[in-house]
Image (cartoon, rainbow, N blue to C red):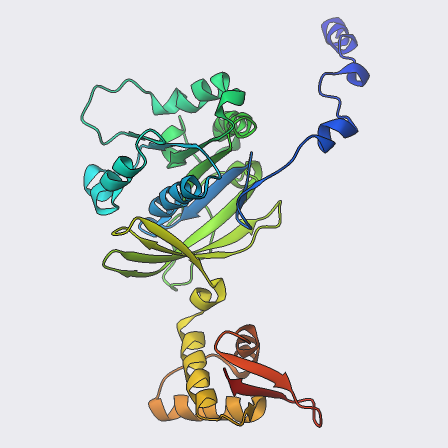
Length: 331
C-alpha cells in the first residue's frame, strides 16, 4: 500500500506532458488521403472472407494514393500470399512502375528469413518517428503477426497498441483481417475474425465484398462497419492489366440480384415512355415483366426506395403538381 501511494504521489496530472491545450488541437490539420475513405494518422482494418479481394484492394488503394500524391511511400508487409498469387495481381509490374516508392516485404521470397513477423510490429512501433509521416504501412494479414490465439483481447492488445502508436507517426497504418466461415444460408454476417479488440482498436473498419471478377477486372465494394470520421461506402474497379483503380457508384454495385433485375426493368420501361410514367404505373409494369419472365425481384417498398436512389443517373424524377406523384422521364 505504501509503494502504491508513493507512485501515486509522483503523478501530477495538471502538469502532465499529455495535458491537451487548445493550440494542440488548432495546430492539427487532418488531411484526407482519399476523400470520404481514409484520413491521415488512422488505423484502418479491411476484412473479408478469403478470396474476396481485400489484399489486391489494399495494394491498389495504396498505389492510387501514390499516383495522386497523397503519400510518398508505401511499405506493404505481406506474410499471406504466394508468388503465383502476386504474379496474377500484377505485382511485378507494380514494383517496376513504383520502384523506390513501394517497398514490398513478402514471406514468399526464397531467402533467409531476417524478419520475425511476430515481433515486427513491436520493433517498427518502437522506431516510429516523424520521418514516416508520408509513408503508408500495410500488414497482410494480421493473423500472421499475432503470437498466440486471435480470440483473446489480452493476446492481441499489445500488437494493436503498437499499431496505434505507429498510426500516430505514419501517414496511416492498415491491417487486413479474415472472417470466420459463414453458415449455410449464404448470407454474410459481416463479422470479423478474432477478439473484439480488433474492432475496438481501429479507427475505421471496412467490410470488403467482391462483386464481379472477369479476366483482369475486379469490382469490389467497401462498406464502413466502424466510422469515427465522415467516411462513406466505396465501389472500386481494379484492372490488373492497366494497373488502374477507379471509384464508381457504390449503390450500383451494392444491389442484390433481385434489386438489380428490378432496376433493369425500370430503365427499359422509362426509356419507352418519353412523356413520363408515374411511380404507381412503373412499379406495376416492373412486377408484370418479372412475372412474365418468371424471375424474382425485390418487394414493392424496396423497389420504390431503390428507384429514388438513381434519380439523375439513369432517368429524371419530377413531382406532379396535381397529385404529388413521382413521375419518371428518360434522360
